[in-house]
Amino acid sequence: MTVSKEQHPASKLVYRRQNAWDCLGEKEMAGLMAFAGDYKKFLNAAKTEREVIYEALRLLKSIGFRQLDGTVKLKPGDRIYTVNRNKALIAAVIGKEPLEYGLNIIGAHVDSPRLDLKPLPIFEDENMVFFKTHYYGGIKKYQWLAVPLALHGIIVKANGDSVQVSIGERPGDPVFTIPDLLPHLAKDQMEKKMADAVPGENLNILVGGIPLLGSELKERFKLAILEHLNREYAVVEEDLISAELELVPAWPAVDIGLDRSFVGGYGQDDRVCVYTALRALADISGPERPALVLLADKEEIGSSGNTGMEAVFFANTVREITARCVSNYSELTVRRVLANSRALSADVNVGLDPNYGDVTEKTNTARLGAGVVLTKYTGSKGKNASNDAHAEVVAQVRRFFNDAGVIWQTGELGKVDQGGGGTIAHLLADHGMDVLDCGVALLGMHSPFEVASKVDIFMAYKGYKAFFLR
Ligand SMILES: [Zn+2]
Image (cartoon, rainbow, N blue to C red):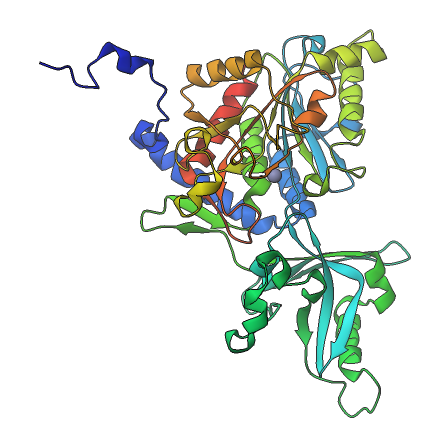
């Protein structure tokens, strides 16, 4: 008689990617659905990097986090935050262990691909008014045509006064769009490569079509829009030069599927990691090691600028925290704190999409529903510019997650020669600390409507919490 595959002792030797849904109790299932509901609300309120920081602050303040600036000394259990130009944030819970032993850090990014208005965006053509845009981050341009877009952002006047703008989110609000070419006349366009089919300079947003009535003035359609902006926001065209106005999808985050297993929405890269990391930090008390959440801006354009991960904000904040925790502050102490820290670079990875199975290598690609993803290395074509976490680091996080019942899986961003991507992992590692990429698998990453599994979102939260408590 042959022994079935399941019964043979050798079957225990095989790694099997678990399905996280199989591993939930009834109580956890209810908790998970409620968590996903809160997450959708967060996505809807936080569609730009500034709005993410604002929502993060709201959450942190509501549970007793205090501004770091206002403190002199910090003791175990203290909860603090600091914000950099409304676009980057660090929040921490001080631990029981001396700071020199290192911090437990989770770093995510708050920016997402979008269409930014150009400094002088307004032009009129054929009795219509458009805004010119310059896209931000890696987008497939055709995905932004023929969809409703909302306009979010800030206009700063020369005197320093600022005006908040949010159009297209409330019921009854107008939205904006980039009309697509009708298929009847798209013969030439359809023969182009997808990358060339929509030139970046054609991503012009339709914003108006009623002229300044009773006037013979030149550009009276544009003038009517300027009059509208002046009436609503008290701004003139020059003010738009010092504005950050971003077009994002106007739709809300929603459940996907008959069984509501997925969340669909804009900006889940990387707000899924932002939200789960913040909630993990909010829900821990009395950690042994200090726990720190770092929210960086500009990851999608190379982490540059003073709110990006390449800037000194992170290291300077660790200096500020160290100065308030140790009696013998020195630059060497700070360097020890940083080098002895461990970090999860919390960013999304690709989930295997059976419709595009040939760009990923099946064995090593994450699956939706199989838990939070540990990504040893990112990069492209030979792990270029990747952090490539040490085996010891991957083993440690595996252990943390296994001990806490976190369902996790391994992931890789695409076939070896297919392409790739990066995260902030290597920039954290520059400080000497051990870093591992760890986040949620998505379908349709960088599209206006990304898809994540609710159980993976929950496992990211559970995993980040487990990490903080070690
Ligand atoms: Zn990302």
